Image (cartoon, rainbow, N blue to C red; front, side, top):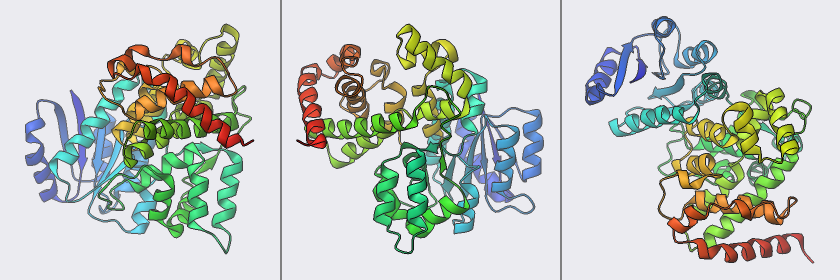
Length: 402
C-alpha cells in the first residue's frame, strides 16, 4: 500500500482532502498534518511515497519544506498543491517540487497525478537509484549550447525565437522547459511538447530568471565520465527526433503526435545524461563493458547497474510530469513489446528512428537487426519498415546536401 502525506495549514482544506480521497483508503495509507515541522517529524518516523504540500504556510512554507524533504528523504515524490502562482513562488519551487498542482484541484487530477507517481516507482527496483533520480532537479547540457544560451539571453538584442531554437537542440534544456511550461504554474489548458513553443509561452524574462537566478540549466562536465561523449549523444538524439517526426508524418499522424514524436526522440536517451553526470564511475564501466564484450549499452547497463538508461530517463521525466506518451517512449524504446500499445504512437516512431539512426549514421549496420518485429507485427506495421528506412535515408541526404 502506498503512503501519501498531505500538508496544509488550513483545517478546512485538510478536511476537504480527507473527504475527497476517502474512496482510496483501501489503496493508500494517508496522513494529514498542518505544518512543515510536523511533516518532517512524521517523515522521520514513517516512510512515505509521496508528499503533497501547500505553498503558503506560516513559518516553513511549501518550498522550504520540500527542499528539506529533498535533502533528508530524496526518494519521496514531492508535489506542490497551491492556489498561489506568483513569480517568486514559481522560481522557489522549481528545484524542490517535482510537479505543481493548482487549487482548486479536481479530485481526478489529484488522484491521477499521485497514482501515476506511485506507478513510476516500479520502473526502478533499486532503492538507491530511486533516491538518486528523485533528487535530480536538472540535467546537464552540451557545454557549447549552455554557453550559447547564456550569451543570447544576456544580449541586449536577445530573441525569444533564438532562445527557443537553442533549447530545441538540447535534450537537457528541452526536458526542463517542458516540465515547467506544462506545470499548473502557467495554467495552460493543453499539453505542449514543442520546446520552441514552450519558450515562446514562457517568455524571455522568465527564461532569463530560470537560467541566471534559479540555474535551472547547467553544463555537462566532460571530464567526469570516461568514455562518454555528450556531443555524440546530442547529435544522435537530434537525428532520432527528426527521424521520429518524419516517420510520424509519413503515417499521416496529426501535428500533436508528430511534435510528441520529435520531443520523445530528442529525449529518449536522457537517462544516459543522468547516469553519466551522477554515477560517472559505474557508468564508465558500463561503456567499457559494452565496447569490450560487444554488448548494447542497455545490456551492459543492466549487467552492472541492474537497470538501463531507458527506465532511468522515463522515471525522471515521469516525475517531472511529462506526458505519458513521451514517458512510454523513453521507457520502452528498446523493448516496445513490453508496452500495452495497440496503435502507432511516439514509442513506435522512436523505437524505429533510434535503430535507423544507428543503421544509417556513425554506427552503420548495427541497427535494424534489433527491431522488435513482434511489436510491429502486433500493430500491423511490419511492412512499413523498408519505407521508413528509405524516408530517413532521404532525410539524411537532404540534410547533408549535394
